[in-house]
Amino acid sequence: MHSEVTVVLGADQEFHLIPHAQLEPHEARRWLDDQFVELDCQPVRASGKVLLVDKVLAVADAAGARQLGDADWAGRFAAAVIAALGKSVVRIDVLTSTISS
Image 1 (cartoon, helix red, strand yellow):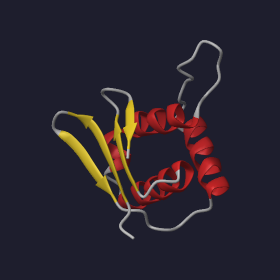
Image 2: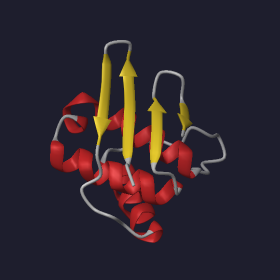
Image 3: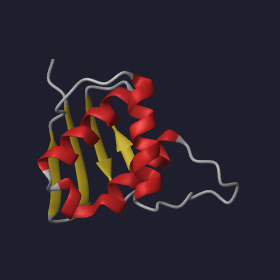
């Protein structure tokens, strides 16, 4: 099965990421949690509650072109997104704050 995560950071910045491994959903959520903290992401809701899609968007945004261009990190991110969301193809548009499959 083909798996891919596309991350759009801007009109001229689009990254096509292929997962390097297969993760269990709980492992994927833990990895995203760790990255959310490590990249100093902030909750977007006043309540402080962070939904999974908010976390994915925040990590993609904070990672930026530098980390999305790093094949090792990008492969782990793609694997985590696919496992956490339960989709084989995911498009993350940071500009419009949307995730689609």
